[in-house]
Length: 129
Image (cartoon, one colour):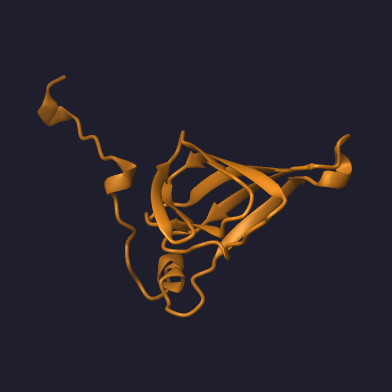
């Protein structure tokens, strides 16, 4: 098979089709760009230590999480699908599937999906003494 017989399209290079009824059009409406689903997988009261919390988040194309801070918890993100930006106290870090991101307790942080595909990740927090 030669190069003219195959076509490789990278997902990161594809763009969603635009139409008024597309989900992508709804996601791009200005106003509330916080569009994500969060699944709590393990709550602190379900653990022996009472300190661990685990979840999974899906951030939709062009959208962001609400953002938060916690003075008493470390947090680790493991990105499983897509790409985006991790914003920590105003500083931006590009992240993608396969990356791990650690946060010390304290700083305000949020994630933003900069692609046309869902951005998905696990997050783990543990309460520090």
